[in-house]
Amino acid sequence: MVAVWAPLAKEAELVVGETCHSMRQSAGGWWKSERRLAPGQEYRLRLDGEAFPDPRSASQPHGVHGASCHIDHSAFLWTDGAWQPRPLSSSIIYELHIGTFTPEGTFDSAIDKLDHLVDLGITHVELMPVAEFLGSRGWGYDGVYPFAPHHAYGGPDALKRLVNACHERGLAVLLDVVYNHLGPSGNYLPRFGPYFSSRHSTPWGPAINFDGPQSDQVRRYFCDNALMWLRDYHFDGLRLDAVHAIVDTSAVPFLEQLAQEVDELEAHLGRHFVLIAESDLNDPRIVRPREMGGFGLDAQWSDDIHHAIHSLLTGERDGYYADYGSLEHVAVAMTQPYVYAGEHSDFRQRIHGRPPTNLSAHRFLAYIQNHDQLGNRAQGDRLTHLASGDRAKIGAALVLLSPYVPMLFQGEEWGSDSPFQFFVDFASEPELAAAVVTGRTKEFEAFGWDPSQIPNPNDIETFRRSKLDWNELNRPEHVERLAWYRSLIALRKSLPALTNGRLNDIGVFADEAAGTLIVHRAGVTIACNFAPENRSIPSNEETSGALLLASKPVMTAGENGITLPAESVAVFGNDQQPQNVAIRSAA
Image (cartoon, rainbow, N blue to C red; front, side, top):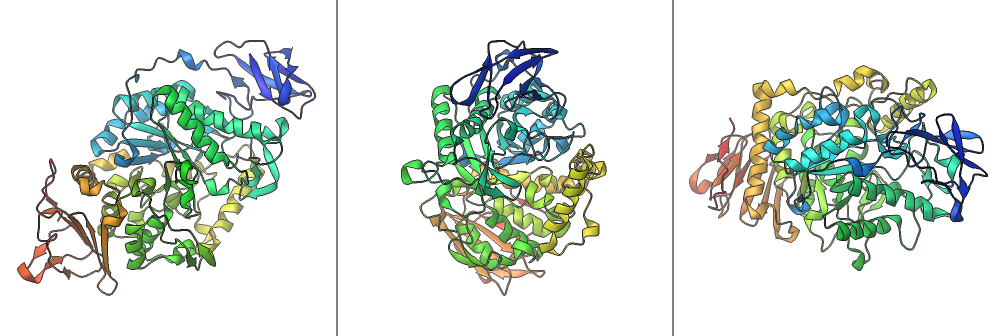
């Protein structure tokens, strides 16, 4: 049976080939047809004489304006029946974009690179959005068919093969989903019902109707989408894009409803799921349990940690980086995920945030690179394009040895030279293509970037430049960088002190004048020297123990302390040598 929620329609038909089948109107604005579709059969839905793709289309093989294709999810042969993911508290997440992760840019080609992630020590793969969007290339945040994996990536079965292959290798898989807006082309939802609100707006246009009249079915649409990815595609969790742009004044917010329904699916299937939010609100209620008045999500991205480390490493102070830049900001970020937790923000010109008291660090993700922090720069620069390789190593150590859940962005682990620029395929709609160029230029005004230096998002070369070059792994400088990341990840996994998530056990000492930062974690000390000269740090019980890892050779001077080389980091372990990790000093 085919069904569609279309309360605005006066007549609805199912169109298969050249044949129209009448649909009967049901309660609540639903229309239904007893006509059953065969797997692979294409169809459209006609409302009041105009045909559209199905809003719940499972596949759009001809793009956002083409016919929908029926998919039988039960036909795929899974081999992961005994699979359970690692808990989020012990995870190392790796964010990737299917179109640029491999030369081919498909779900199937990504399978060939999974062993690299396993060898690195990754536990969770996070895919940037894959829902159908206009054209053959894009970031995925302008998707318009949330239930349909993008045709250019390989479609539904290819995505299932990728998830299954990840599970075979012990990798959990998370999917980035966008529930705060839809893309500008192919978005026919307003023709079906009141999916959007006239009372609220977002940076991308009208807000989705999560709290107005007839919003129950709008919520149902997005909750059903989340459950589909977890149930039918075997994803282990979802990353929820920009939840601060979800405007919802309901007594039970959509995010809380979503978390509850995911918990119910988890109980029914006996599989563990996680929900991770992106939010710039610095509001701990997002990850507080529902029993404590929170929304009940499992974790959230923490941009404050990124901004504090990035601005210190690079010296950037434009745009939102104006709120950061000191060692003290990094020191705060090592002890709580919100640098701004009720303090005045000069960039926002108001008090920002709320203290995240009594929450484990495992509720927060830390990173020095992600798709936003690269791609929302004029040139898509990576950290290694903006700071010395030695300083970037310090940043990696702070994230991977932090109490938070660490996340890497594709290619970061070997210091990829490929930028990650913003790209789209809007050539078929020139007005939209021009609007994107204008919007990107305006967005970068706060950073003072030269508009003439901003790559055209519509140019296919912008996309090609952003692809990873896996041949870099044969070059000595990239091999050395990869070895550093492997050592950091192995060290994190070897010592309970580095995975306990207890923020109240951390001591941080910042010397702004000297440019040094010392982080103590339950018998482990991470000593950082950001200065361009050697610096001495006091010798104590922890630093006099075993040298576990160092980015450059460390010099000891007995009772006079330890000398850290310029722009370097060293880790000491209070005589507790980790298992299966070689002590390493990189020259």
